[in-house]
Image (tube, rainbow, N blue to C red; front, side, top):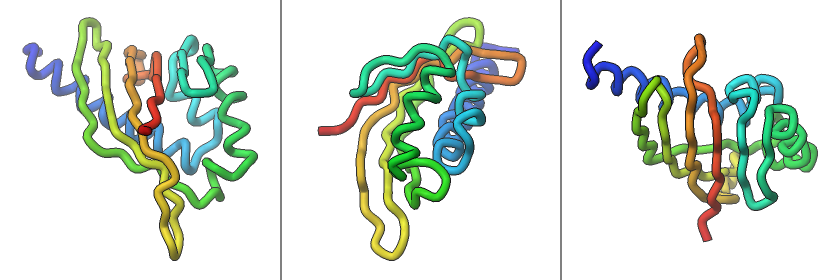
Length: 137
């Protein structure tokens, strides 16, 4: 495999995984969402950093309980401008712009920001190693 083929394979897989994390955040369980992450994932948001799948799941439970995200919330994550850079050993960095939108008869943009992500590779493909969530001001 040439360098360009390698880069294209990694970039495509990571781009798909960025989208899958959004779909799963909207419609899946927290177990399904954290299965897309490395065991020692680091999740950084305005609430502070969380380390490990269990900590991330616990941290995301609150917004789900408040009806902000997750199944039945009436919200969706929308992605735009996803940029992926392949690194050595199938690692990668990605940066994407997102919007959290309330859907329905009168859609509203609730939040906008960026995901700044690092990815590692497993037998099943890319896993989220680190996510920094930057809300637009």
